[in-house]
Length: 114
Length: 113
Image 1: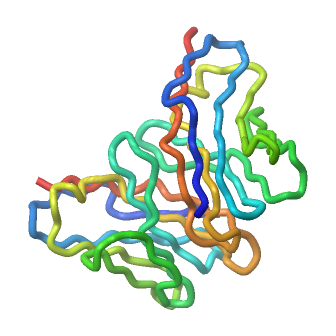
Image 2: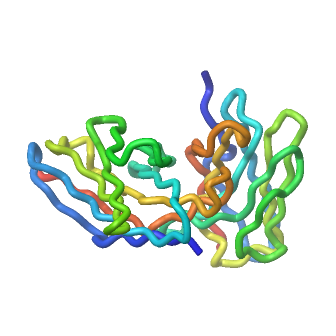
Image 3: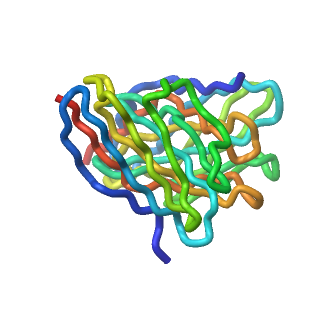
């Protein structure tokens, strides 16, 4: 069965410093992986997705993630944090790579200090 | 281009009651999935509808049921509400045959008293 583990429940950075949100996955085959962001009292917005085309995936708002099969990781990064990046971030794996069930991590809350 | 819409935005019910939540998918999408997000947790998959049939189901009891209409909109019904059903209910739509990305609506927050 597929699963994801987000290694930090809360990350705090200063504005203008790099962001690193860590995610490890478990899958019996090459997975489809996603990062979604959820701002307070809002729905989920897709940041980026990996579907085996390129290991470095660029997303919206300056975020990117690198798929590392040897480490079973899919960490999310951004070179310079902005106050508006403060939100909950979810690492997600597709259960069947066929558009069905998505399996979410527990989430990482990102705080950005001025 | 309208995204995924859900109604109502908030709902308060009492234990034992029944509730119906509604979802309209993104234009051009044919598949609707429902998720439950309890406070402080990641969303959990309830079920997915495609061509008016339940295509997949997660580990939720039969009290949770759904429907998809010919225009691809969908309803989630929950019977015999429990306090533990209090959560944010998220609807996601996708175009199943072409890509697996699911696009989420803003959710319906259900409080069961």
